[in-house]
Image (cartoon, rainbow, N blue to C red; front, side, top):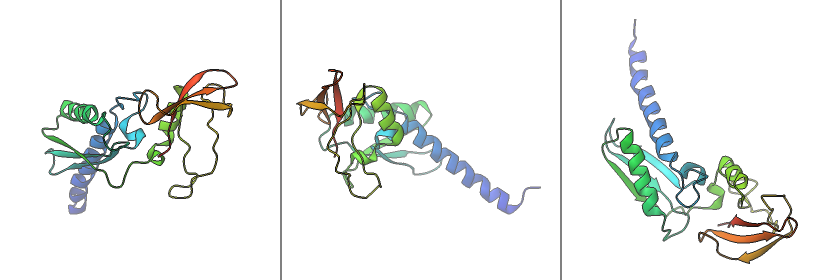
Length: 177
C-alpha cells in the first residue's frame, strides 16, 4: 500500500534525480581550451535550473575571465549535450558575479591538469582563507620547483609558459586568479 507520504516523496525524489542528471550532463562538457577537464571540474558551471518538469532549462556559466572567447563554444556544447538528452529548450546565461577564481577548480580538475602536463594553479589551503605564500611553481613532469617563466601567456590567456630547469621540459602553468 502506498501512503500519502510515499507518494509525495516520489515526485521529490524524481525531481532531485532529474536535477542531478541535468547538472551531470551539462557539467560533463569538456572545456574547449583545456579538453582534459570538464566545465564542472573547471568550476565555470554555476547553476542548472529547470523551470518546470521536463521543460526549459537555464544554465549559468561564469567564464574564467571577462571576454573569454571560449564562452561561445561552451554555450553551444552545453546546448548540444542537453538537447541530446531530450531537453526541449536550453538557455545559457553568462554570470559575472561572483567572478570565477582558480579556487573554483575541483581537486579532480587539478589532478587531471597535472596528469596532462599542465601545472595547476596554487590554491587556497582553506576555501575562502588566505592564499599560501608559496611562489614556487612545481614542474608537472618531474616535480622540481626550479622553473623559469618563458612567457606570461601560453596557448590561452589563462596560462603561462614555463620551463623546468631540472628536466628542461617546457610546460603550461594555469595562472592563479
